[in-house]
Image 1: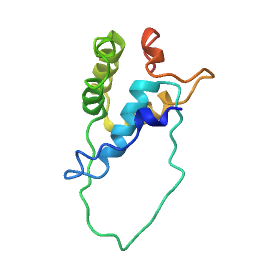
Image 2 (image 1 turned 135 degrees about the vertical axis):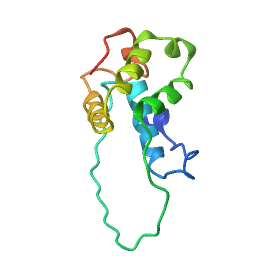
Image 3 (image 1 turned 120 degrees about the vertical axis):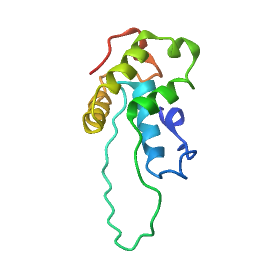
Length: 123
């Protein structure tokens, strides 16, 4: 199962934004399980009475680069990871988010971390 590779949430940026922890989960799924994990927002909550909290997003390329530093050395040095980061740096935020979700559409294969690393860059 993939969950223990992408959870628990990283709350280190919560003083800046509560949204970044979800972005980190998306980056972990993208980096570790490219084309093997489906992510979907199936719950929408509207709360007009909530308190103010830190909000804001970071560029996915930056988060992916930070997350890649936590990966095994062979992954960090992989050309495909560096290509992904450079490629994402050239895209707008909305385009990047759409790319993340499209790239997370699974192929019919066994799930394993970094399986794509010897394959082609997905975009």
